Image (cartoon, rainbow, N blue to C red; front, side, top):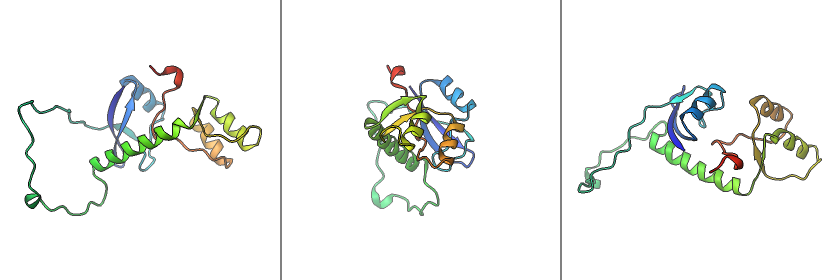
Length: 157
């Protein structure tokens, strides 16, 4: 797995996990990436600072509270705040998926069957095309995209 900081056309920066760099390229080309804050599909990699740890014999000196500079309220969330939000959202999605059944590429059919009363309602997740998802929503079927990609059970290590 690899993590990338992504940035949308509106300037929102967020983090996403991919199986590899080619997976990011593939999802981007198929317009599967959207900004979780504004929904725009104009998403690309953001510039990332390398995470290099300090030498073992060095430590960061904290700025005493009375010397800390005053900060004005931010009009929009900082990248750090967005990152914390995204981590919280990822944990919530993982917890929700523990109670959900993977139905794979049959998601649209299963959702329709539940809506029409052919099968019992249950919490399910799977894959569908953007066109199928739009058709479900247009027909009033309660579905929503997951903010983070899900690795199918048969593809997990």
